[in-house]
Image 1 (tube, one colour):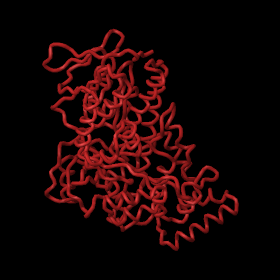
Image 2 (cartoon, helix red, strand yellow):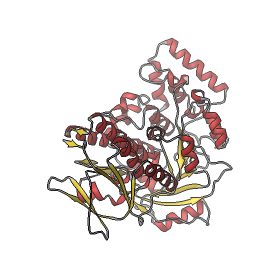
Image 3 (cartoon, helix red, strand yellow):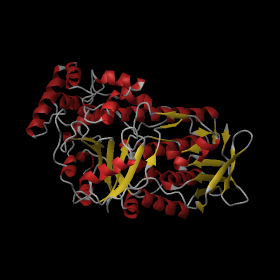
Image 4 (cartoon, one colour):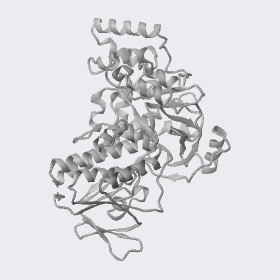
Length: 511
């Protein structure tokens, strides 16, 4: 049992997005007399030059009482409507497919029968690009301005899109810090040298560099990033590596100017010889980086490829090194790790911030529901759910590499990697039918909300051919004749609107 009912001080090690979201959560969760303190080292910078959220970012902002207009104004955030994958199939410049943040309210999503979406299956069978059913895609295709995108999103369900944000990690952390301090969070700049635990392994204090006395605490949130001072350092929790399934382990970040007149409304993921390049459009510039496999390229080769692709004026930042995976337990006693301190995989699909916010939501839910008194099995359930969610992330990302590229050693080797057993089962199912909620619901257990749902899987699986067109045809054959007629009429209308496209071809040229 963990009793947090009468605590005096909760400490967060580290700032950044994870640290300050943690502080805001703790400030709301505990009574005003409980001190919430963030100890942030001035010598450790924030990882990343740009970041993008998933849809749970909006929920987290609202949960913490942060208005979206103020958030955009203070952080320079730009709309994010999904992802664009470039060059992942043929490697040609016009090879694109989209994973967009679709929303209910359109017939393509709202009509479900026999566990799947017949209209989307009809599009897959006919080789039509799924993003073309979404009316709001037109704004992406024409490189609409932020004002035009806002007007489009105000149409609500008829736009077919939900939105998250691209943001500058430094500006976001600075803004969250100001909000947290205004609400009574104590901000201390110091370097934590050691976590002090008692004989039972409970955290009792942190020892700071150059200080004679320790800072006592009753609860610790470890947001120390890749330093991983708590769970990974002092407590020595075992690491669960994904390196057998995901090859990328290095990243070279950099800034670049906008390649279009307006910030793109999607995160761009551009296939490269030894990995891929992210481009996250902010209001003033683009935060970018090349994430790569150190077994297939060194830093000098990567920088040369960046200069060749973007231009010689690009100044790369410090190379980030990581091993994809997570700690098997991230909540141990009165210590919880969040963000990079708890786990990390490559930045594909913005999983890092999405997972961090889901951890915090569930921590708050469990502590609040128990009035500060938490049964040990609930912490076990939390850790089990966290690990299961990471497995879902691993499997979803692994599917992205089931693509037809074979032109470099990296793309050949990644295609030969073994499939995680859980994804191998899904892959076999997707050869026969489209993804369904029953396939992925067990990635979110014990009160967790899934980060990626069946539609997210379909938006990636269909363009890559993981769901063959024949598989969609087979499941449509099981529908009643009236339903099949409705699908046929829909396909006819879509063809009249010019929505046809072949998933096996190069893709859209418009964005």
